[in-house]
Image (cartoon, rainbow, N blue to C red; front, side, top):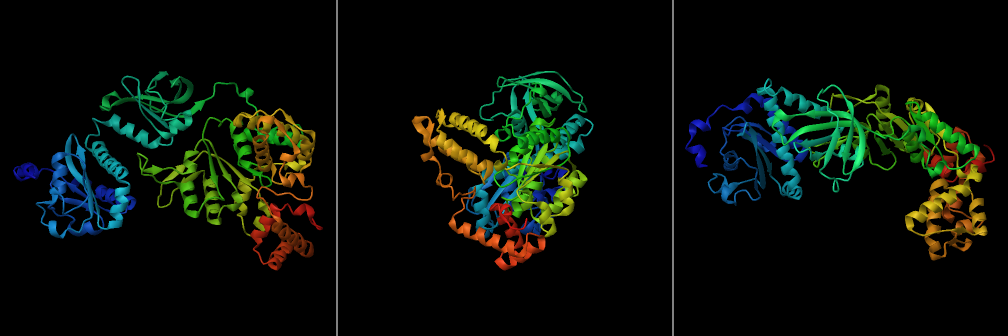
Length: 587
C-alpha cells in the first residue's frame, strides 16, 4: 500500500461519495437484501460511508483495510477466498483473528479515477458456499452496482455537459420492457436485449452481426416505422433510432422498439387452429365469437370441459387482433405455488439480468395480451390482486409505491363453472363480472360429431409430418370406432390418441382397429384425459347416488359433499372431471 502511505496529500483528497451518503446507504442495503451477505461502501480516503450488519461497527470512521487499499490502487475487482491466509492479508492487524470467510471488493470509478470501493463480505461458511457457487454472477452484479453509482455521479456532477447522456439513461430505464438493440459505428450489433430477441423471433446464438436499417429518427419523443434486416430476415418495426455519438460509448446508435409489423394483408389471416376445423354449427359459432372478440379489447372468459385447449382459443383471439405482433403472455394459475404466482404477477430479482430485475408477466404483456389459464384455481388473495390490476389498468409491486400503467388485454380460461364457485365463496364475484365481459364457450367434441372425421384427418397429417411417418389410410372399422367414441377428454385426448396411432402405424401406413386403445375398442369402458381407472368408476357412481339423493342444487351439493366426506370444491372438480351432470336424475 506504498502509494497511499507516501502520498498523504493525495490520500486525503475530496471525497465525492460523501455527497451521496444517503444514496450509498440505500445501495448497500439493496445489495445486502439481494445477496444476503454484509456490504460496505468506502470512499477514496478509506472512510466507511455505508455498511450493513456486522460491518456497521466502524461506520463513519477511517478503516485499515488492506483489500480496499489494493482495489483503490489497482482499480480492479479483487476476490479474497481465504481472508487471513492470503498474501494480501500479511500486513493486516486482524490477520490472526479474522472473522471473515470471504471478501469481494470492486472499484467505483468516476472520470477514470477510483473514488471508492464496494465490498461484499461473508461471515459464515454457508454464505461463502452460496457466493462461490454464483461467483461470476456476483462479480457481474457488483460491477453493475458500481456502474449505477458512477452513473448517478455523472447525472448530478456533470448535468449540463452530459444532459444527452442523462436523457439516454432515462430512456433506457423507461423502455426496459421494449426491444433494445445497441449498434456500433460499423453498423454492427454489439448488444440486443431479450425483449428484442422475442419480438424479432431470433436465436441469440445464431444472430449475425450485420445490421441494416432504412430510416433515421433522432427525436426522442417520436416513433416512426423502420425497415430492418438482421440475419437475412426482413422486418418492419415501429420505434426510435437514436444517435448517441457524443457519449463516448462503444455503441453510437440505439434502436428502441415495441412493435413488429407483419407486412401480409390482415384480410388473409385465417383461423388455422386445428381445434377450429369443421363445418358444424357449434364450431361456426365459436369461430364467429373469436373473430368478434378479436376486434375489441374487453376482457374475455373462455370456458370449456377438461381437455378443451383453452389456451389455443386465447391465442386465436390474440393472433386475429391488432395486437397479434405484440406480446402474448400466459400465467398458469393452477400450476404454481403462492411464491411463484407472486413472481408471475410482479416479477423478481434476476442475477442474470443486467438491470437485476425480472419483470412480471403483466409488465411483459404490456401493450399485448395476457392469458390466465385455470383461473378457477387462482388463490383468493391473487383474485383480489387481479381485480385491482384490471380496475386500475396499472400494477403496483409489493414494497413499492410506483404505479406502472398497463395497457393489456386480459383473457381468462376455466374448466369449472365460476358462477357456482361464487355461490360457495370460492371465487370473487366482482372479478367474475370483470372477466366475463365477453364469454366464449368451447363446445365439447361430443357436440361436434360431424367435425370429428376432418379433425382426425388433419391431426394425422400433422403427426405424419412431425414423426416422418406417412399414414395414407384409416381402415373403416377403426374409423367407425373413432367417430363413435365420445371423447370425454376432448381435444387433448383425441390429439394424444392420434399421435399414438400414427406412431403405431409404422411402415404399414395404415391405422387398424387392433391398434386402438382398449378404452375405445371396449364399448363399456373408457378413460378420460386423466386415465380414470376402475376405482374411479366406483367413486363416480357414489357421487351420482349422493346427488340424486340430495339434489343438484347448491344446498344439495353441500349435503352430498358432507355425506361423501369431501370438500365442496373437491365435489365440483369431480363433477366436472367425471362429466356427471348429464347422468343425474335431477338436472
